[in-house]
Image: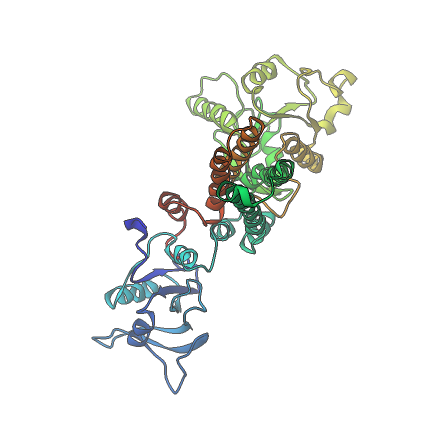
Length: 465
């Protein structure tokens, strides 16, 4: 491994988020051959408590030289191989906050441990055979999950739901490779190769790879979420829509145009997908310098959004100002939100059904002030996502970009094997691309992975994981 992931020695790190006056417990985790020695040096349990694996001891942490009391704590002991890293692991469960855990960590570093690198505990679990690479990635997905569905997808990966089919696909490719190489080495002693059978098996493998690839967009949505911008001219009810949707008073609402001067943000979950909603300032020409800055930020937010909720006033209908804004955002995925629909009874029938460009296919009518139309809006968002083929058939499984790239490479290699067979090239040529597919599948689970890939994956972990 590279220097950043040197896996020798005993490592220590704070394994919990440390926020002043927020956490009641802080954990310092130690893993390696010196873990028990460090624990016995620093931790002093009263009475006759037994130091054995998977037992929690109560006691005090003292500075080994001065004997100064550092904290009253619990000590959790996990002896190899029955631990997260399959090494000796101890955890000091201290009082939360900053000082206690930092002092305990410093004592561990002074008595034989070094500070762990990001993801090094999980890296050791992978290198020691406790986890494969898909399970390791699922751990960081679980830590960062922003919705129950994202957490479920991560748990499915942690339980091996992705690893199992990948292992099976790779095993099938290895069986095909063994059949071909046997004919190369012992052609005279074996019956002729069943070309049709091999093509059929390769097609089955490719079909399964395609099914797994179909979950990639779903996985990306679950991990990163959907950025939605509410866009429109001033005073069409954008802020009221955000407040009604988020069931809060996130945005200031007044009858005066230009009230919203900056982008207001709210985080929601729609159909299991994390959604970041941006209420933008009304887009119009203005001489007010503060409002002008807000309008420019609105334009930037709209250009960066995954989906635009283009909002108009039902009582006014489609205006020239609406058309001008629409021309700026029409290249983005867009839903037309006709707001203030509860007020159209006071206006003409023409305004009740405002005209809009025929290119707009997704339309929702709302009354933000009356909290009406929110469910229809969420349904339209999910439908737009599904139209974009983001929803996966297998909701429990969601591959990430790295896994998708490796699966795509495996599929390309298998297609090349079929092309080589069709061209009736020698058997040696068949094995080249077949080995490429095997390598790509092995990269997913870690059976055939490079040091640079491991560096890239584990550097994204937090230090204590």
